[in-house]
Image (tube, rainbow, N blue to C red; front, side, top):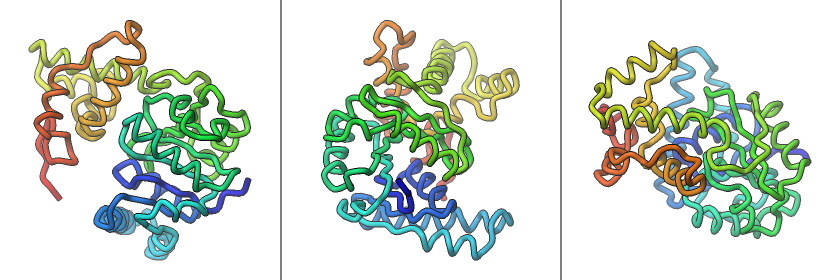
Length: 288
């Protein structure tokens, strides 16, 4: 199957990054959001991001113009019907994803693969909402997608080898990424099974009064040579998104999951302090 046009459902932080890398690599992109306000906001953000790349001399003005010309935003699901590959990048809620995949299954061309950017939810369960479970797969980008090299390609129980091969080819040859194949559809896949443990344990260390947020971040960066501390990362990812991931893994893995979701994570979400996107989480940020 030749892929020329990619449809992206959702234009939040992850969706925008996926849209950007697809368009920069020569694909036509049509993305869908639930309101024109969100469509325009995403387009403006993408223009600003590309503008910063121009100012840093990483791309030319012509590159910017060409990339933007390949991007179309819409509020109509039907506009995704001509896409050759679909990527869903909406909030981590299973029922919402299943409803969305049911709609995508009805409008997409029969041979189209539908990928989900979920970071932890079951590919098999999402695929059960469609009549093409063999063509549903996890295509998990990391934040921020334009900078992070890895894409996890996750097979559901009924995902075909052909679907996995086509998805890896798109990510590697089409988008210039490195991939790992996750053969077993388990909560958290590979990276989150590892990273969630260190994030949750960092919050527990803070809650126990062992060290401050700033010192835990400093210790992890300088002691483990990580580029970001755990609290900086939680604020970047979105604390509500992290709560959804932690809760899903706790539910799915049961006793195999070593930690309960920390109180502080739940409290910050209840208070609306979700990290960078709201201007405050574990740290405070200047709103742009």
